[in-house]
Image 1: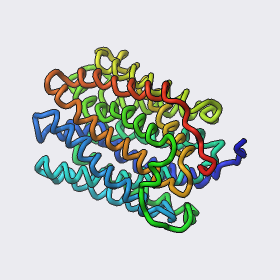
Image 2 (image 1 turned 90 degrees about the vertical axis):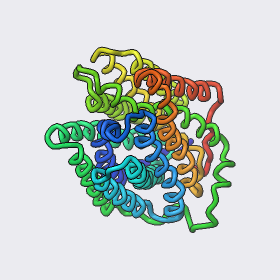
Image 3 (image 1 turned 135 degrees about the vertical axis):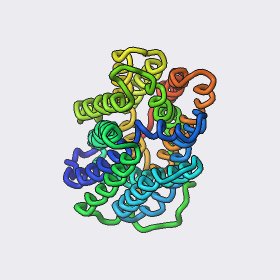
Image 4 (image 1 turned 30 degrees about the vertical axis):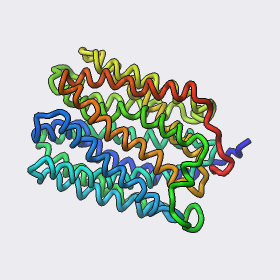
Length: 389
């Protein structure tokens, strides 16, 4: 039996604070970016490229870079570097005049965000005792969900009071503020001395390939949501606009993760993965067919429940099966699946949205978490390695 050790909550809180600030910055522009990018092009496919694919390219580049920077080293310098890059790109975006410039700046923004997200996740998994890993990941996920709850509301208020350019400046301010929290951490080198850097050993970890497939399919719907939900709700004349939808969804995530707490470690992780993917599937269908505020609100709650159950468990499972010596590389590969899914989700449904509409693209995207659900349900358990402490 794994020893139940009390987590170092002070250090974990510092990491959560830093990531909360940076994620809040990204939440500020989350509901407005696709609408802002649409001013550069009439093609929803090109808007999808600007919103998710270009950012995804930056994220994909960030994962191996973050792994190389952190192997055997402290995590916080990488987090700081990512926050500074994110802030700089946010300040640059409103000055651009062509969609090609937007692509490049958005890729840089994705690079910075990828460094922050990878460093923060590695730090939390380092500090979380195995017997409390689900609980810690749930609380960490709740902090990022709080950011994505308040961020869109701040973004909507800033745009209403000033304009979209001001929202990008606010994003940069939040990202810079996130750098201060890491100076309160007390870190040492992690994972032993640096060795020859290769991802080959990571791919030999039992179950990792299947986990990557699950994560890719499960998160494809998120790329579709980030791109087409603001466009789908732009013509909706009810209360549930994009900022309200994201706030409801994030609120559901926070309540769920804080409410479950240690229960995340009381059951097989696959149970939460199955329930989460089932809720994401239902949310996708709801987004495709709902017309009323009530229907859209329920879809937002379902999406939040799905995301709230699924995401901490997929990363807790990654921590379970990945040895400490290769943790940052293993996380980098798992997070690459997330990046590819978010980047691809906004593009793969672009032709559907162009041929029909954004609502149809969202409804069709429900097939992706449904496929991930089948892999989890019928693929067998993920075996925890004794070295994953």
